[in-house]
Amino acid sequence: MLTASVGDSLLARGMVQVGHVDIHHLGLLWHALFNPFVDAGIVLLIGFFSCYTTALSWADLSFVMPATAFGYVVIALMGKFWLHEQLSLSRWLGIALIVCAVGFVAGGPSRTEHGEPVHPELDQMDAGAAR
Amino acid sequence: MHPAVHSADMLKVWGVIAFVAALAVAGEVLIASGMRDLGDLDHIRARVGLLGTIRAVLSSVKFVIGALCMAFNFFAMLFALSIADLSLAGPAIASLTYIGNAIAAKFVIGEKVDKRRWLATGFVAVGVVLLTR
View 1: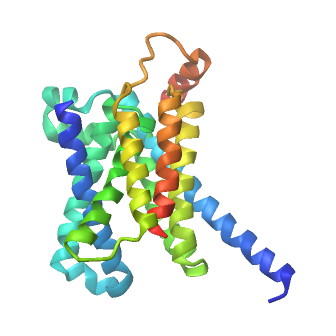
View 2: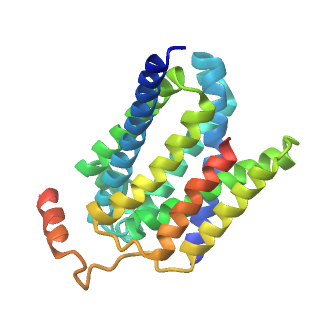
């Protein structure tokens, strides 16, 4: 659980910086590469991607994905408290929905154990593809 | 605008949106499947160190193809934004990606997507639409 929460907070930080990169990409294009914010964003993006990949090595995709959606909430709240943006009612509703979703998956198992064959034919296909 | 032209435009826009989302799903599923084959990266790192782990990840064919899908997805996304409004394409691609990922996780990777996860995926898809509108 500790690794999961630390990983999640790192992911959230990475996601916030992903937002930064996008904004600069749209506005500045090539000059963006020389912008320290963008460079920091790229470094954090790589960090995010490696955390995400590591998470996928011990948890299901359908578990990791809703959990990382928490990044959207962090972005919205950063916009509110850091950039003093106005959050409309529908955005607050969106935040509430995503928080609920993260709560749902966090309460369940993080990994499908293939000990009991749920889809034996799929496992065979998977093993075949890996060869 | 002529109604027939309008609907053809909409078809194109939604086709591109579906394509971008499908690319993202393909990338995620390939990466997830590659990582599942590799096993817990923390254990691998304990055995062969950080560089060995990076080498192991990068030598996974599924991971590399998945990462290429993600990179291609990024450019396809820029293209989508050039023909569709950000307020439509952004939320539509994001929520389609979440739903497509849950479906693919169940039927392609064989993950046990229980009621809890379906509910979470649906909530995130709706929540993203509300947030990014």
